[in-house]
Length: 358
Image 1 (cartoon, rainbow, N blue to C red):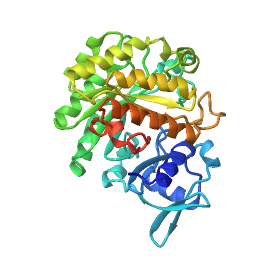
Image 2 (image 1 turned 180 degrees about the horizontal axis):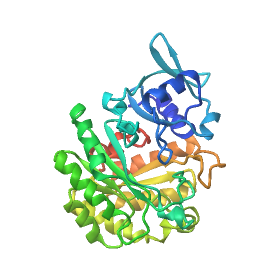
Image 3 (image 1 turned 180 degrees about the vertical axis):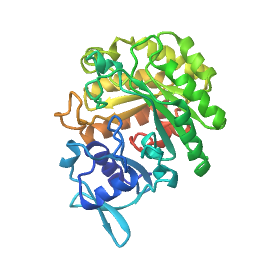
């Protein structure tokens, strides 16, 4: 049973992030020397009372956080001025700081995050930004056509990483492509090259549901072990407002994609992210009930007003709402016998969510 005070603190850290301080900046320089923010989920990683935490850092909204990092006698602490907890920061593997001839570090291409996770952008940018239909919580800040990264570079770095830690799980991600394959076609060569280098690597691809399920079959044929389709907002009207481009993908395409995944890959293989703090809890609850009944694991991802997103002037998710929604998810997981720890990617890590901690 997780201590309620620890769980509450983790929820607040996930929502508010960590304010800048001498020790916070020092830890950020250790863990993320390239200052790579991706879509805003990269933060400071540490263990808090046995729980993995990935807390946002380096954004305008995190400057208002009551939490900061302190260091004393070679020990690290997180404090809000009233309560203080000792933490164990994630120590980056030595490969992360190795550099290419162009001066970029390997971790600029492949990020080490959370609990044994490697995250790589197969392509940078999002076509919904190009069409001015981006999701309003997203901070990719790129209105150009997506640029595909070199599969050999990504696969080579991942292969090097596995020499240091064979227990990594790989998440391939990127912005959205507004084409029938929804970006899946760009994953094919990267997945195949990773598998050539390291056949045992477990690779999950994050993408919107393609127009045709055969695309997902092809993705698995090329070597992907799993895929992840994040529905993000449940209420149909609000979904159109928050995700004007992505909401054009019918909700049934998500369920069809998940059904294919469950049939092909097996139980506990499908998960989806719900951006929490932008819609009423009653609406999110309906979504959770439908999603868990379909055998899919939902994750409550707290809304962050990341720099450059349309909603950057809004307040971050209320921790009380994150806890309430996460408890609803935990009940649904128990009801349908779903286990996030058996998932192949982010959900098994749990550093950015609390439902598995509950």
